[in-house]
Image (cartoon, rainbow, N blue to C red):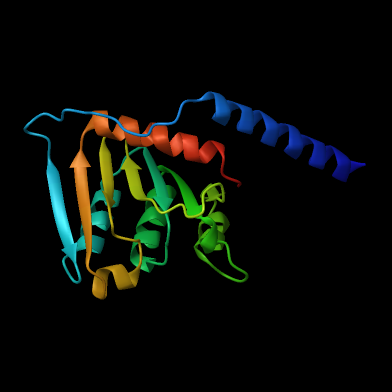
Length: 182
């Protein structure tokens, strides 16, 4: 009987979230005029300091970090997120379904540390590489959060301090969270 209640609860929750998602218009494009003095930092890899810049930004966080990642295998970035979580920053992670593997993975690492972790299976690929920090900083670019992105690949990272831009990215993150599974 308990299993039936659990299945019913999951089904009802899934139907409600799907309904909300379908009624919420998607964000396909947004025009935003950033002030000319908006701080933007650009990093390139291989070996261009992308990982260090991301960790430095995470270490300055105070309240919230929202992560969307296609691939997440970077131990130093994972440790920085865990350290932020331990000092009271609310950390939430959405990963692509490819990160949900048998055995130990980034999904199990974050979940085992008490960091709410979600899998976005709604899309063929949840190819985002984004962090939204304290509702005012956006980290994005082609850079997967992995060692090879830092040491082998040609990648880029933008770190942009803009509450307007962070708001758009945060809204998009929330829409992905609505259709992701815990």
